Length: 265
Image (cartoon, rainbow, N blue to C red):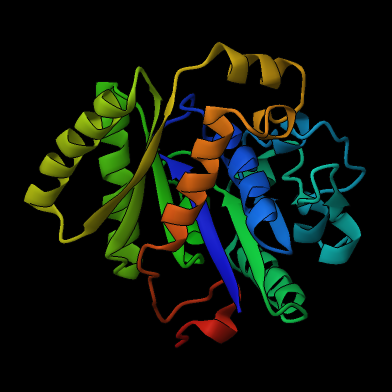
């Protein structure tokens, strides 16, 4: 059985990919097989943070040039990476059949594993690509920061995903906070706003403090959790990873990653 987790946000610049990379490594510490799938085709840079330079990417799969096994890169952390590649106009607005090509390719690959964590770095915002790939996952983690634009855009994203798939459960992770107390307060503010208008359940999975060390790790192209495995920040990533898995999984009738374990139409 495999778990698929979408990491997304209403707007860019909130640390989504940094969190996706560090959570992927956290899951590697907790389970046998982990893949990070970068579907942020407009701003794909997870390979940069992992310190690798893939020869091929998801764009080659979308174009029918390579199969999924041919574009997987083994990173030093043990996480398997499928890079999103560089942005081109034909990748930013995919036809449904090309999106389904990705879903089916990953679906077939996952059939060979009993336990697998698939982390999907989804593009920020509520564009079609982002919503389709988020809907294909069992759990959706939305990253917010303490800015009005983040609240507005994240609300719109959750509303769109809910309307497209009837997903009820969303994990909320608050990034770039001063401390745990301020992180939880931001979550409650967002939850109060959302609960007034949407029939969804928000699950608080934690917060990540603003950190110079994390910024330094980005510059050095070495994930923080790898460089500082016993630090409070790294232990916090492990706790967040566990808390995400302890939230309810969404089910729906559409195409999904590892669809054999989820309801299909």
